[in-house]
Amino acid sequence: MSSSDCRHPAGVFAPVVDANRCEGKSACVAECPYDVFVVCRRERGELPQLTMLGTLKWWVHGGQQAEVLRADQCHGCGLCVSACPESAITLQRVGTGSTKS
Picture 1: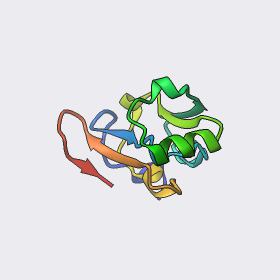
Picture 2 (picture 1 turned 90 degrees about the vertical axis):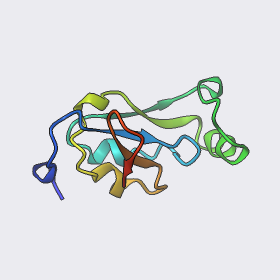
Picture 3 (picture 1 turned 30 degrees about the vertical axis):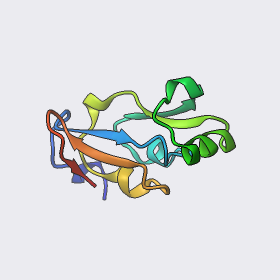
Picture 4 (picture 1 turned 135 degrees about the horizontal axis):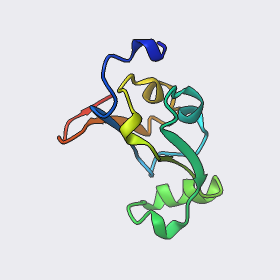
């Protein structure tokens, strides 16, 4: 799949990163043709939803987590979903609660 396979205009879908699964390996950054993601060190206080296991992963990986910086640029192609080794990314239709993975 390539960026030419993206069948949606920007802004129809937005990626959602599950902080309890993300290990900051940057596969999403490398794969996304629209520069939607960045991996950076996040403080524990920025991630109140982390479970005990999520906190352990966060600590082991030096606080590195993927973050969606430009969700409005997402074309919903799913390259990030396929690339993520932790299955930490889903695509959510903007304005609804449904997801596409």
